[in-house]
Amino acid sequence: MKNPELQELFHSLKLKNTHLLQKNIWQSRVQGITTDSRKIKPGYLFIAIKGQKTDGHNYLNQVHQKKGLAALVNSINPELQLPQIQVENTSSLWGPVFARYYGNPQESMKFIGITGTNGKTTTSYILEKILNDNGIKTGLIGTIEYRYGKTREPALFTSPQPDQLFPLLSRMKQAGVQAVLMETSSHALALQRYRTIKFDLALLTNFTQDHLDFHVNMDDYAAAKRLLFTQYLKPEGIAVAWAESKKVDFIIPQKIKPVTFGFNPSLHPNWLLTLDNLSIKGLKAHIKDCKNNKEYQIKSSLIGEHNLLNLAAALILAQSLGVDITRACSGITKLNIPGRLERVPGSIDVFVDYAHTPDALERVQLALKPLTEGRLITVFGCGGDRDALKRPIMGASVDNISDVSLVTSDNPRTEDPYTIIKDILPGIRSRQYSPEELEKIDRGHIVVTDRKEAIKTAIKHARKNDVVLIAGKGHEDYQIIGTIKHHFDDREIAAEFMEE
Picture (tube, rainbow, N blue to C red):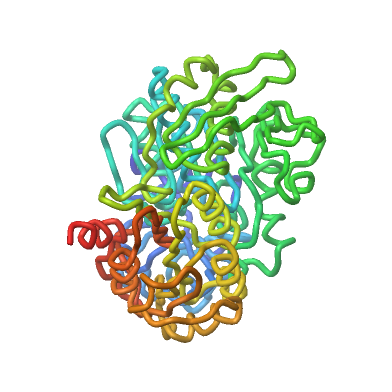
């Protein structure tokens, strides 16, 4: 819909104009839409969104001064000459308005929503490869990047806001994308960013503690995840879930009858997993279709039991889209997921992982520990201005599983890095040592506030057969100090010290 008339844009939304909206405005063409008053140009429609930190209603005067066409608002400011369209909740109409302006591109593609605390990115990358290998053109929207065909765009949000999402979907449609793989965050679900999208497939990877800086509690967090299955999944859509995930019966009501997978036969999953072999080079396993009593072999370069769950989820989703599962299994032998147990080439085994929640950190350590002949040395921290309750939990996890932990900075943001570290330390009971003692000790923890120095310490003092895990930032190529992003890539820094 190229520069539609205002009345045409709102026709399907069934909105009524207010007395402040002159009749001749309805025939005016909308030159653009934005929720950012700084981006207003003549003829633009402004949508006033009340967010966590700012309220767009406070900037209506700027919209008027910049000759904006009109504003969509929750409440009218009668002192302004700016035409205003009052609705009950602008947040709930944010998505539909942008979708209609961009011609509802979502209606011509299949949508696969992947939610869960951990595993979303890895599963979406695996599924993307399987579908592309089988001739299905995909678009991927997730934590690392947005991509389709040969186009790569940096991800501003795991789940982009409507003003970014629908232009992106429009570009994907023009590129011939058939299936869109979306990491669906609890934030986006709770804030109704997907209101015009209905998913053909929806996956729950797992459910553990995270985002309690946004959600009131774990029940509120679970309720947000539940929306994917109760509000956004098509009536004929298929839900897929790890059978052993916490709160799975609440997040996916039984009336939906999800397709389940897992290791525990007593839970009667639709797909039963058997792990045959794990090594530092990869895994071998079997996945059984219990309904049809058929079994398939899985071989992959991915490491860890948790990655078998990610592989299984992707295979089941692919089969639901018509891909032969035998062919799908043959395409997953060699995989490299950015920042997800990503190996840094060199003389010792060094892995970089995005694990920044208690569950993810525990899983990645448990994946590496049995495969480690020497010591497992874990470098980790916690992000600033985020859920502080998980800090001692993560400290305890590393202290209990790894042999040596290096406690350091992550993205401190506006917090003092050492204040964050002091929140982590109550969970650690092992003895503290100096960085110079690392090579001699078999167990303990070391505090190195500077992340680059911590990585250097771990690699410099690693013994033969040790494994070094650098956790928390994964694919990120920046570190946020204050409100500024500085270039910082764990993989680059590790590679630099490996060469030394």
